[in-house]
Picture 1 (cartoon, rainbow, N blue to C red):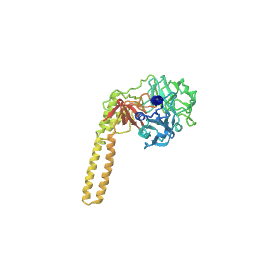
Picture 2: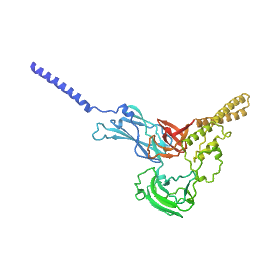
Picture 3: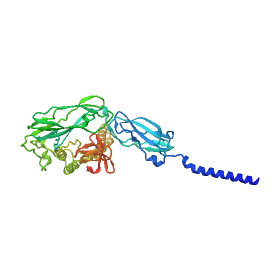
Picture 4: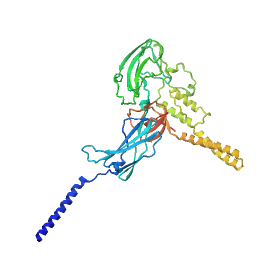
Length: 462
């Protein structure tokens, strides 16, 4: 009896030990996985499509592994100007075959943009398994909706022919003028024809594949697409307009239109006449502004490093001068015109800003004195004048404090990276307003264009 009881105890003890060992071994296999804090913090909403367009639903996605949708809550915060919330949706994210991950959650966020530009949407609040996170969005470049765009035509010249600031190309009779036509915002080119200009030899050099093979209408590229290259040889000195070329394109909205040729004038000199070249230096740039060159169309100026530094110096001089009492602005505009630049923004005058604040303080003191003398009407008038100068002083001070510089020329990129296909090229000498800095990149504005440029490609105006 005692032996039987002892055997039962040993059996029960061995069975308990077996269950404990089995539980320890099986625990890793059956343990539920949870996303770590560092993992979720590293996530961001990514754009779904290569391009975002205005007036369309634009989708971002966020994939979170090892957490089911019922354990994820999304709160949308304030959105930037021109951005509207459309919808958000959660769905089960099935892991890739062979992955150790469990089912996760995919968040699909749809936004709409009313204006083109570069956007960095504010981070939104996401709660995962009861823990609060702020998940950012990647910066995106929003383009004009291609269905609302009319196909465009541009031209690029070879063999050293340079287009002047007034849209004139100067060459000599017998010269070969080779140029390539490019289209933009066209699905396909349906027809190209041309007429040979008078007193000229004109021939097609190369026809690109895009002419004969229409691309998929759903495919979009913001880049210029080469169409055809011509070689034109004017045989007689005269003034020519652009050769008559007819190009019919199919747009993204299905309509057909004839592309507009660029407005370019060709001044063809006699082969025995040498084109005039502008002198390297001028004794007075201000005096040059009032010169009347005999052949202004022949003037071609290369905006080199020395010219860019001089533009910066002239603009810094303008900032430290008083308008209407010095010739700093005229000297600067004359030199920029000589360089073929058309910078419309003037420099805000630091002395004028100081004078504005001084007038405001004097008017405020005067208004107090007038009210103490119980002259209410005069006091109200002086107070209104003081308020006007206060508003003017504040806005003018903001204008003075805005950082800007002279761009050395190059690409304006939608993101701070090199070799971006959607980058816009800006000419050397244009003035850019600096909005933000990230490492060795600056986020700038030029007219209505925004983008990133390398920090060392700008001469800062101080």
